[in-house]
Image (cartoon, rainbow, N blue to C red; front, side):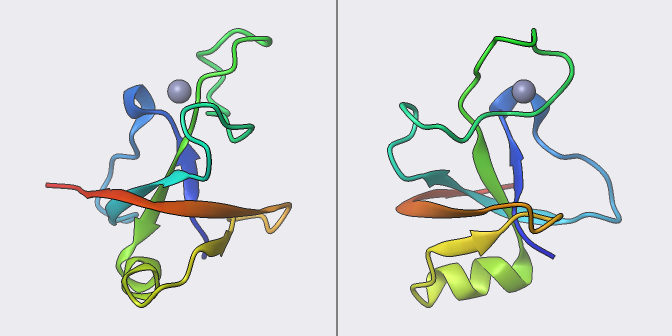
Length: 86
Ligand SMILES: [Zn+2]
């Protein structure tokens, strides 16, 4: 499954993908993890947050900090800072 990287403006929506929280990547907002949305200019690097499904959020709460991204193209490491979504 993995975490979805998006900035605040592109927070994931939709019923089929229920993200319950996001965590800040290590170093956020001075991070190499950036939002991949095509709405941003090619060279515009907007810091991304790691949105988690319930299962990953449970692991996060248990102390896991390294997560896959959906394509498994890269893994990212998140910090202790997070926020629960509504
Ligand atoms: Zn964005």
